[in-house]
Amino acid sequence: MKYVNYGLLIFVPIAIISELAGGSAVLVFTCAAVGVVPLAGWMGRATEELATYTGPRLGGLLNATMGNAAELIIAIVAIRKGALDPALRAGMIELVKASIIGSILGNILLILGLSILLGGLKNGTQRFDRRQAGVNSTMLILAVIALGVPSLFGHAIAEVNHDAVEYLSLGVAVMMILVYGLSIVYVLRFATDDTTTEEGESRPEEEGHHAGRWSVPMAVAVLVAATVFIAGLSEILVGAVGPVVAQLGVTEFFLGIILVPLVGNAAEHMVGVQTAIKNRMELSLAISLGSSLQIALFVAPVLVFISLLLGNPLTLVFNQFELIALGGSCLIAALIALDGESNWLEGAQLLVVYIIIVLAFFFLPA
Image (cartoon, rainbow, N blue to C red; front, top):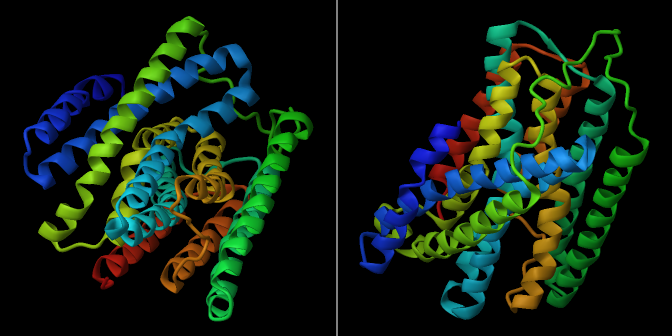
């Protein structure tokens, strides 16, 4: 993983030079997308080092938050670009909304599926804490409701009062942030410290723990530098979306729901799969489901408020195809997590669902 992060950094200067030289939009988009991956990896490494000074629970929260930082930056850049150019406004908002749904789908179908499949093939049936899995499953269903209500009611409300749709989105966003905040309080203060499963088996929570190799100033410096470069590459990436759509014949929607989430979460995805292979299924589950919940209950509502400040309002109204994919994906992930154990077949099932959804979105017309 470390050597991959080193090697892929070459795409950062290539993307910048290609953009300045007026290179092919596809080349610029590809290099910028690949360049974000190692930067997100270094951001994750920096937060991991900081976590050794903050403790495991706060450190885990910090890792989850910074794991979604790259995608949040890309979304903010897209919203800002749409605010500056009215011709791009609708396309950029569609890109951001699709990236929200795509991130959730990618985490709970692609990454959790790969983790369960590869972990199961190597270790057989893997077990994890059913109590925490139950909490996460309930939160997943809550996320579907929170994102679905404005969408289902918004179309009817818009026929009478379009402004009311924005007010509904703002109200739902506040409630989503509130429940996410309550979940953080629960994890940090009231969640059990017991390190055994319900069957009495020890969970390998401390495996792979290490003392901080970086000082706090160094970790903060790397974090800031990675964030700055990700912001710059995001500007290049989003700027190339229009020409790429024209050249390749795909839609902003497909780029947003499939490609952007893979780019923004690639480093975190690899960590989730690696931990499952090491038979640390509970940590892998926390990474994939925790990231999905943070996107749905924190990143999405925060973007609603940020979009207002940037003058390009984003509402939590999604199309019926996104809602169907989201609801079905969260349901199957919750069912797999509830019994407290997983096997490779369940991982294959999640991957099949993801491939079906990708094919459907690829052929969906603009």
